[in-house]
Image (cartoon, rainbow, N blue to C red):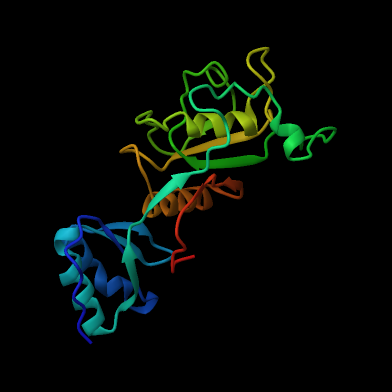
Length: 212
């Protein structure tokens, strides 16, 4: 069965069957595709070669699934602009008042926009690890820092204290070009899994993916 894709100016997520992954690598790399997840056999294919790549994989019986690399949206509950605005009211909203956080050092991974390491809550914070380059670009650039603050703002006498101030915080920037994409979110999850067990926070959403 042939595949003819619309001429979309978006990348495509293409999954290859596990038994054909090794054989397909040269084809995928030659097309300019980028590996998103080895475990899933998942590649990000540029629009210029998507139709050819998908058709070729399908003809050989190597194609497991494919879909556009969808844009995602951050779930914003804080007032725009100032991540300190609510000053701790979320603790009551989630029913966490009176609860004690775990002991120091349980890792929490935030897959979101970049973490602003110069922010007063995070400048000098220990146990904070950037899993990739952190960029602060675009109108929602504060979101990753705000979410990280809700989770892990330290007890430093500034701003407020997070739900788990002694967390080992791992940050993955899934919006290096100011917009979240499914492939960058998958890459963030994979990076967290590769580093070790952690709680993974995804404060974002979009249409359902066949890769879920």
